[in-house]
Amino acid sequence: MAEAAIDYAAVFQSLPGMVALLTPELVYADVNEEFVRGTGRSRARLVGRHVFDVFPDNPNDPAATGMRNLEASLYRVLATGERDTMALQRYDVEHADRPGEWEERYWSPVNTPVLGPDGKVVLIVHRVEEVTELFRARGRTGGRNGRARVLEAELYTRARELQELNERLRRAHSREREVALALQEAMLPARRQVSRHHRAAVRYRPAVGALNVCGDWYDLVDLVGGRRIGVSVGDVVGHGLAAAGVMGQLRSALSAASRVAAGPAQALDVLGRYAHVVDGAESATAVTTFIDFDRRTIAYSSAGHPPPVLVHPDGRTRFLDRATDTPLDARPDPIPRPQAETRFAPGATLVLYTDGLIERRREDIDAGLARLADALRRHRDQDPETLADTVLLELLPPGGATDDTALVIVRL
Image (spheres, one colour):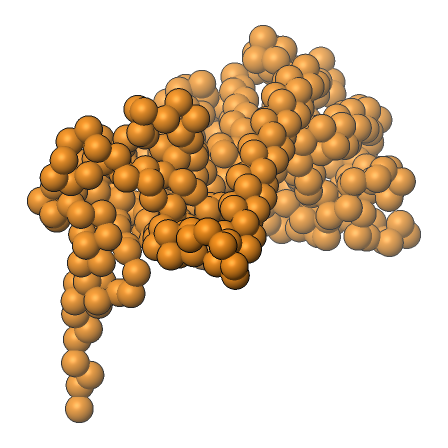
């Protein structure tokens, strides 16, 4: 016997507590009956309107912060794709039938994302519990109720202090992020330096709304007068200034090793030994390729990193995955890393990248690899600079990725 279909609209309306659905533009998409009763607004006065057009701050209270705090929480959900639980809020509401008359109200809000197939936030579930009546019921003076009122006021004060502390921490992290990004930009090769390496394009996109930035890197190295070059990308686990510092050390070490190594595997062997003594290099990954334009070959080796993509002029794509090994610090020294070689035809394209370009929450990595291969095949005739922008536009979520991304494209 087939199971009866679940009426999710009816379930939504029956949810206990006040629940609303907001679009990424912070417009009410739907509200349940409890939300209508609790706010004193009809569904018609809510759905289709911006949340802060319906519920602005009390203009008679210069210290009002409810709207600002709620806005910050909702934008954090949009940026991170993660639930945000707010501290207890005082958020006064204008009386529905008496314009200009404001009621003191207290709320406990939780904002939860609803993600689409691409990992992008498509709706926000805005759930609030009103605790105004608790404050009013225990607001009488004298005796036990008076003591309860003092304790509740203290709890509310501590909740506000905690929220203010969190805001200060976010500002501090934001400043650290800016410094780390500036440091990383100074350490990575500039586009004008990359332009010397045949027809190549590089891109770096920091994560949006997250702190795990500054661990991705790329490098291009002249090996033999421009007829042989090394192209590498890597990823350091961690974030902020610490990750940027480790990134700079590993990139510089690989750049130096590549100039004297017999091949990419030997260069990664040297880098791996160096990673063992660098704090913060644990589980770091890298892939490096040596391109020989005279022999038309690519030698490559990977230390736990996603495979480069070779796009042939006719549109065939091939992932260079025959020399994949463990991350940099995870291999015993006496055992050499694997190395493989492949040939290319003039006009082919080599693409190296970090996992921020292909990975999505709750999605198999093969889906991201297939998406990358398809984009490269369809746009293979674009020049490297245009192709780099196209790939980022198609593969990164519209609001930005939650992990930083490095990308290198070389026309062979």
